[in-house]
Length: 268
Picture 1 (cartoon, rainbow, N blue to C red):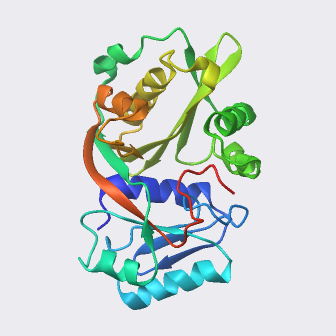
Picture 2 (picture 1 turned 90 degrees about the vertical axis):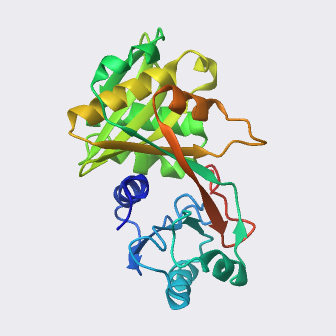
């Protein structure tokens, strides 16, 4: 069974990349976006070794899926991925370890424990289809994703399972964040703040809004991820999550098929 911390992200990307080529191989989900051939964020095999033990034949089948489309790709591995020989197999296939991600989880709780996150002058609003262009525009500019990903982002506000939020200063959009709900799990992602609005508490307010939305949607568990601390020092995203009551679960290693593969989401 795929644990909640991985299931939320897997199902969110299945939805985000609906309409693009996907495949279920050995219990893993292969997603692709041919417009970004070096992106190991969009081109990935998620859940390898979780629903069932991986096999070397399965890894070959995953490789063939991406090779057919001319894509570099990533295989994220949790500490519990099976069999334990998986890292050795990937290295034998020429994979290199990239920058790891820390996975986080927290119980969904009533909103009265979120007051300390609301110290911002920005106004957080939920947006649907009528605000899809604003949501996509702010995230693309804040996070640095390629312009050709804009239609993917414009499609999610108002789509099944998604709750999307924008922080405003007056009428000026400043930051974004999204929640995707699958069953009792809520995944938090698509968080980005424009440079001129950073250090204004935008992400704290957006975290509070999404935690409240997850509670309202009946989630039992909320999950997300950010880069592992560099030289043992957590970054601002890591600190924001801890402050919002998320607990680090483990570091998930990202194995990359080539030196061109990149997990940041900012490369085409």
